[in-house]
Amino acid sequence: MIAANTIPALEVSIRRIPAPRRVRSSPADYVASLKAELGITEHQLRAWGEFAAALSANSRRMQGTDDEDQPFGLIERRLAALDSMRRAARELFTVLRAGQQCKAFQLLPLCCLPQST
Image 1 (cartoon, rainbow, N blue to C red):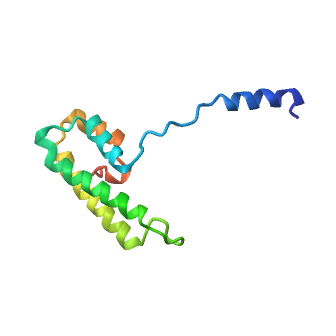
Image 2: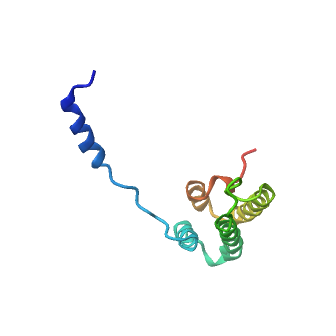
Image 3: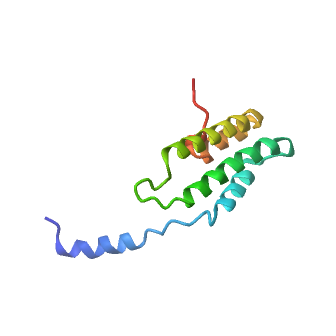
């Protein structure tokens, strides 16, 4: 049994937990922050542009969905978007240096990461 005097202390400790920071204010900000954190070079811009376009298109697709039964859109469109992001990520990983690849594994959405064989 919990003593009555321990409950207020629990409430105080819960209130001290900081609220999560909102890191991204928009999909464009998210893409820009990824580019900066990965340190994309001029040589990598073409592959980065294709990857960023795939991420942005997927974000627009998800925001434009009003179907309550399928909140992220029709499965066919979701799979097509996934395929597009994976292809673009595969191309991006071919031009990233080793250090950038390690950072990309930490930052990119899991669905975009190359499959291990």
